[in-house]
Amino acid sequence: MKTERQYSVLGAIPTPTRETILVSKIRLGDNYRRTFSIKSILELRDSICNCGQVEDIIVEKAGRGETLHYQLVSGEKRYHAFKKGKIELARAQVYPKLMPEQRLLMQLEENRQEPV
Image (cartoon, rainbow, N blue to C red; front, side, top):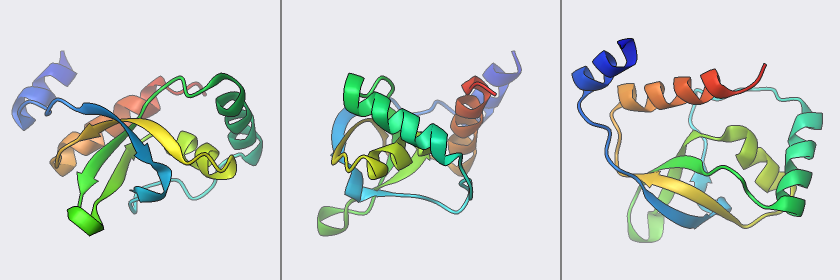
């Protein structure tokens, strides 16, 4: 119930498009983790290389034309696994511009679902 209320206060989150994007066009924001278990990143890299990408990353479009890039909303561990594996393309849910509160809610939901 609390989540529904937060979403209604913020308005509807726009519907994303599902696209395959260049990993090199993804940028990290300021609010991401500074450290990761390298073992877990390498395990995820191996899984993606052997089995393919299971979950989309979530990004927000930024810039236009030549400066088009994507701001990572959630899926940072997958992003680092792509980089370690030299994987050039990623499947993503691409959102238009989000409000900071909407972005935060999406990040919190992603973290809530991640196993401890």
